[in-house]
Length: 291
Length: 159
Image 1 (cartoon, chains in turn red, blue):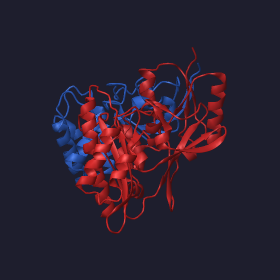
Image 2 (image 1 turned 180 degrees about the vertical axis):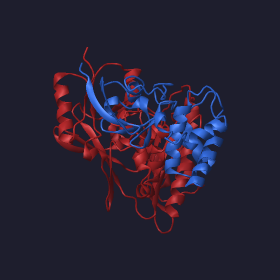
Image 3 (image 1 turned 90 degrees about the vertical axis):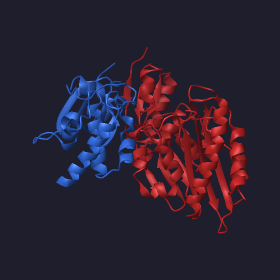
Image 4 (image 1 turned 90 degrees about the horizontal axis):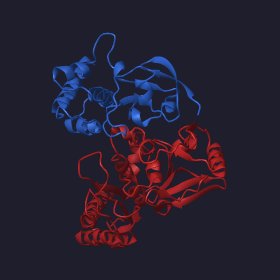
């Protein structure tokens, strides 16, 4: 049995080299950003020693850049830092409010949306929101950099599309246009500090007549991974997002969901609630977009 | 298995220690650094009893590796009072009986300091949501909220 080690590379290349070296040796290595999932797992379910590769000294992974047409959010930036950025909140309210729901103030001081995504919990709150906002993963590995839409990055419960020598550098998001916005809602048993029973992220754009021209709807905690629901988007596009359109979008989310029953709720309850969240989140996104 | 040498600053005093890579900041605060004011309630970031400020940011020290505190400034409950005496937050917790067993109290006071440093005039809802990561089994929270509100006015009065 090996022992724990800690490394803090200062560049993406150095991190990739470290990951590759461990992959070749067959020794266990794990990327560390905020640590709010990793340290809990390390002391609970998964006590096997490993080398921890801390990415917080890598400039690229901590970079936030709002460009003219797209925004880059480094994978390791804590949610609290994102939520102090007013311009970012104005561009992606759905993503930021989702990140603001993760855990507590203390957790948000460390937890990153990149880590939330890579941990790939079926209930990870920022994930449906980033899918709705059309976020794309920027991934670095030995063969260079590649990009993958978030909805394709999730491969199962707790698993993602990273190869052994790859790390998530950050997320690229297209900036919404003038009459476009997003929202995220989740249902939890308590008021704070809980894991989503169901979650829904919606992003929409409208034309000058108030007709929806594009939409993305994603659901969380109701399937092994967060899911993009194209049928829900189709129910909204070309409509003024009236009650009928909202009902249809909600029904599409129910249809797409394949939840489990557990201590937080039954599968039937989750199928019902995800539709309610879809209708409400779409209404909020519409009100934000048109105001 | 080799230990890592870390230098940091705790309550504005330079410290150095050796630690295993997997040890947490909470482990070293309570162990080699002898700062037992920070408490372990759950070890999983759910209760907030281990709350400290890391470079001014409110975090759970049970979820920070000791090695990650290299070069950082850590503020614990021991660093809240000043040479002049108790911090107004501490004074108000006493006046409002906002503690019984006291195990959650260091975490609450550090979390409250982080709140009032950023937002000197929070409303009740803001206070409750900010402190949602701090659990108390004894008080039922209400006296804690009143103490925080009173501390905020006290600090505003002094400003």
